[in-house]
Image (cartoon, rainbow, N blue to C red; front, side):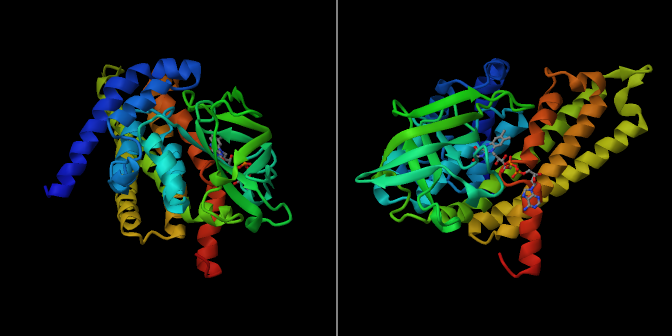
Length: 381
Ligand SMILES: Cc1cc2nc3c(=O)[nH]c(=O)nc-3n(C[C@H](O)[C@H](O)[C@H](O)COP(=O)(O)OP(=O)(O)OC[C@H]3O[C@@H](n4cnc5c(N)ncnc54)[C@H](O)[C@@H]3O)c2cc1C
């Protein structure tokens, strides 16, 4: 094993141990209360697991997306969907890629330590896929922006301390009217978190509605220095975001196949192990094959992202295909578990319910296919 692989495997062991010993036992309680505990973010920060691919000068681990994907994979493999490190990392990457030096130094070290929990707020009650139609308004008033509006379905919304808030600074424009404000939420007058939403799955994830009424945000919190760059900033980071979703999908498949392989060997039906029936064996072979293909594809995409050669269409392919396969594979795993597969205490049950939204957020899978077709037919990438 070369030194780099060895270092990655050691990091994987650290993350896996942390997830298994400090997160898995707490997951049932987190799912009950619909959010994780703030302390686990601090603990992840102490272990250097947050912002794994952020340079050390900003408090990160100084790794690459290979390290970052290991974090998301090890969480996913154990069905820990409430600790939304992906959204946290995406928020950090907006800062890293588009923030002013002063902004990076102000927020990134506190995100890496877990002191600040990050969120991204794009979606609104009136618009999701059509991001350019957002209505949350930011009006410049001296050294401040005054923000009015609301955001819906915001991951980490209940706990978030730092929100990358997508606003309209010029409502007469579509894409060119969009900017991103970094909002520190603690004790912020006019800012209110609505109820934590009751979802089909991802029960431990605090998905919430956010309200802004006459909220004054310092103008120095505008991401980058120029108004109207928000849409471009969002678009340039989408492959990163989609790779987190896709890598998660592949690790869920691996975790589900592993749990199912064990289950069918231990379950006795008609006097023999379930694994002795041809249908069980064929199904297992099929989902193992799908999972392997997904792994090979995702490794290629990760390598391309690390070398800076991952194009938007390929990232979109990874996002839609891996999440569709995640749904299919977890469904087959539930079926092989019989009634137990429908019980929340079984990993495959939680994985199946959690999988559904992967095809919806991060850009719906229909939007992914549109982007791929556009890159083929219209020459746009
Ligand atoms: C659990 C959860 C967590 C989320 N986390 C976040 C978050 O942290 N931050 C955030 O900003 N948002 C978040 N979202 C919102 C998510 O990104 C949106 O739900 C998603 O983008 C779809 O938007 P929509 O719900 O308005 O659906 P719509 O845009 O109304 O889409 C409805 C349907 O129409 C299809 N459709 C739309 N446009 C087209 C088109 N041009 N061609 C073909 N079909 C189309 C869609 O694919 C979909 O099937 C989250 C959502 C959920 C459920």
